[in-house]
Length: 418
Image (cartoon, rainbow, N blue to C red; front, side):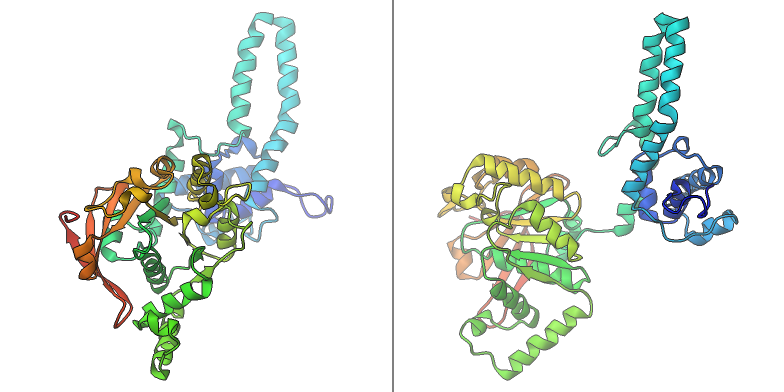
């Protein structure tokens, strides 16, 4: 193994690998990219890699730095000089530099002695090089059982996904995963339901990021504070909060901060693409994203979905949401088209704007709906339009906005009502 006295700019890749092998996330990345001992030149680093691989296989998690130092007294765990992705690229490039010429020489000798065998040898060597040096991304093979089980154990340790707003829904759908769409007609509590979910996540210790693209950010923020304190939002609108109510809002806010936090933002037009919004949320430390609502988002050219109402734009944005949801769960508010006006029962997913795109990418589609009689009694139904992983269900919600600020779960219902 090289020492710091060789060249001051030299990077000891094998020593840096050892440092990364003490970091659970790095071990996951190494297994995901199928970095094997064949890429490693130093014997100690090779043995540490093999040990850590076997440890994950047997116990479902990576060995700690202390365990590695106890198992290998000759190493000392510190801070790696590279990020894990860069290290993997450098290890592969080194392998190609050190072994590529040898492979070419071997092929030249075969071509001279056994010309007919060159084709088979080229194919064999090519497969070997691809297996060792190609970025794997989302590719899985039957040999990837350790990688697959490691991913499963990581998800199992994380447990249920971020909250949908109610324990009944979280138990049924196991929290938010992938892309969730909430659909409803205009002025039917979509924003309120979303704020309820944001609040529930903050109370549970999560860090949700709400993009309030329809409402001003300060109004969305104060809706959340009123809901946390159970104070009628109309009192904020009419500027008639009492000193006691203001104090209740401060107390409720402090209670949120004792467990988690939240952010409410409204990016300027031109900054509402999926990639921009997800990057901003991730950089802020968010672990789930809520977007209210889809039609105010922009495609990659900066075109607003609602203004163009182009099916192709919906497909582009929906696909970007799907891809980014691999990094963080995303909850998106959307609208039904005009065909649901005066509907007497729960609409169908085909009645969403840009329906084919939504239907294809959604992990879960939910809908809010109420008929005339239900509205008189301050009731709405929250039902499943489509679910990739779980069965359908409908729940009844009692809306309380006159004397408080609360959306109370009443329980599951058998049908949507007539």
